[in-house]
Length: 149
Image (cartoon, rainbow, N blue to C red):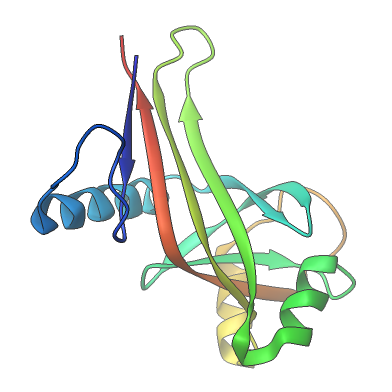
């Protein structure tokens, strides 16, 4: 059985009238999950790649390289950003217990050299070429599931 949590104004099916305080609590929980797990998958354009991330002021930061489609699209859209989805999860392969969170929002390039240096120091890419750029995803919709027995 799965429980599904939705935040930012969307209510789970079968739970009309959920109070605003409940929504905020679920939002805090989903952001907490992102902040305590460093791996996930970013989905854009429609490429999906395993990456690690950090949560900085409720925004998801990932490193990328200058030639990536993600960075090119984020850069081309500038301050408007480009819509992406980011998934992080921690599900036990034997028990199938854990959690999964999907954050959808606008992705923008990080242009501040000091911020980029800081993120390069804090994040260690899993694979690929040298990660000389970074992007920031500001989630507008965060949903999650927690499989239960």
